[in-house]
Length: 216
Picture 1 (cartoon, rainbow, N blue to C red):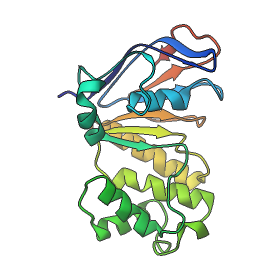
Picture 2: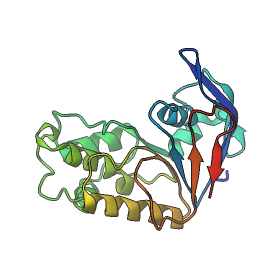
Picture 3: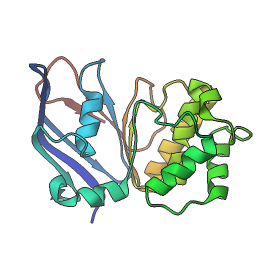
C-alpha cells in the first residue's frame, strides 16, 4: 500500500453553513500539508474527517487508493493523531501518560524509550510529576513526545505549536522536517509560520466555500 491520503470533493455543512465544498487534497510521503484559515473555517473538522472521526459528510476519503470505509483499521495503524487539546491525564505523571498511550496503541511499552522521548522535548527531570503540576506548555510537550516514541508514517497534528516556547518550536519544526525527509507525511493546522520544511504545501480554508486554494 502506498502512503497516500486523498480527499475527493469533500463538503461539510454545520448549523446551516458550509464550512467547505468541493475540497480536493492529496498527501503523500515526504510532504507536509499546512491547513490554514480563520477560526471557524473548518480546520479541525477537516482533520477529523480525514482521520475517520467524522463520517456524515459529502465526498470521499481514500487511504492508499481505497475508500476509508474499507481500510479504516489500516489507516489507524499508520496514523498518529494529536488533537488541539494535549489529551494528557492530569492525575498521571508524564511517564505514566506515555506508557498509557503506548499500551492503548498496541505498542510495546518501553520505559527507557519513554524517558528518552521526554528528554527530547525538554522534560528530563519532570517524568514522575503529575501532569496537573506542569505548565500548559509542558503538558503540550508530553503529547509531542509521542512523535519520537510512536512510529507512524502519517502525522495529523491540530495546532501542535500552541503554548510551547521558542526552544520547543524549534524542536518541533525540526521533527516535522526530519519526518518528511524520511518519507513520512504530515497534515498540520497552525498559525505558526513554518520555515525550512521540505515538501511544504498549503491548503487555505476561508469564507469562500468553493474549492479551497492549495499552494506550494
